[in-house]
Amino acid sequence: MPFRLLWRNLFRHWLRTLLTVLSVAVALFLLSVLNAIDRGLDASIAEASRTRLWVQSAVSLFVNLPHSYEQKIRSTPGVAEVVRFQWFGGVYQDPSNFFAQFGVDPEKWLASYPEIELVEGTLADMRVAKDRCVIGQDLASKFGWKIGDHVPLIGAIFPRLDGSNWDFTVAAIYRSKSPNIDQSTMFFDFDYLKEGQEAGAVGGPPGVGVFLTAVEPGASPEAVIAAVQETYANGPQCVRVTTEAEFQRQFITMLGVVPAILRAVGGGVLFAIFFAVLNTMLMAARERTRDIGVLKAIGFGDRAIGGLLLLESALVCTFGGGLGILLALAAEAPIWSVVSSTVPGFHLSTVVLLQGLGLALGLGVVAGLLPAWRAVGLRPVVALRSEA
Image 1 (tube, rainbow, N blue to C red):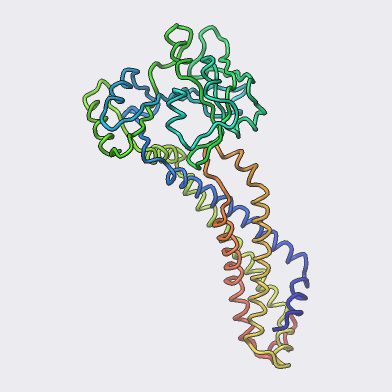
Image 2 (image 1 turned 45 degrees about the vertical axis):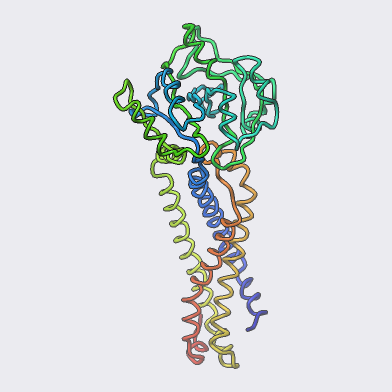
């Protein structure tokens, strides 16, 4: 196979080749990122704990449960611990600075999540006062917060009735060891909120958003689910108990058709780039009709000529795919900072990268088949007479 001719042909129209490479690079960048987001959503379900259950109102996730439910749930056989969780929904300076905040029982919360470790500060630092909070590493990096900093929040759901802001002090910073848990959330003492409501200083709905229920080792999660739901089957408020995987699935479902849209966009991008590369290779083959005739006339076989076009197409797409993957790796950290609160499992894994390269190579081979087939079918006399 005339490899020197291959390189000459690649740079024969260098601008067209460059634009094709860049087109493939952009496509593979998008496909890799979309694939990583899709896998991240799946990972948040796959990595969910089997020993954590979530008890919520059967009406809606946004309807609180009475405080009294905590004791009955804890007394259910197979339950090791119950942790109160309350979505706070505060605003930091501006609504665009969104991040999640939850009121929890600090000691029980941390004990129930072995995937979380405190990298700065301690649980004892959080016990100093009710207004102490724990924040994730990504949240700390985003706003430049450190231990001892104050975090003022406007109470959107739970406003202070005197019109003042809530004031939290950073006591510790945590790191997550699981794609199931993000590093962009703030946790504070649930009693800080509860006591404010009981004192008449804080508005908002009373009760508890959800109860995290830790199952004892060896106990059946299904049996615990059935027992808790049976306890409240006749009220005063019915509950729905789900595994952590199902609870995570609810949040993904709240994203609507986003996962399906991601796959559709990825397919559309791949479809468009395929025809762009195919058109480029057809143009290249047509321009080289006389060259192909000369090669056949001096003794080059159909296999060598067809392979030349196939290899050219594969190289263009592979170069573009490699460039796209490098761009995706360079953008991984900035993208993570944007999507981590929704897709904590976002990660450009080796599988994603290898799939991208394989896809680029396959795209090049498939796009080169038609030009190669047409070149193989050319008769030398007809090709030499061509004016292309």
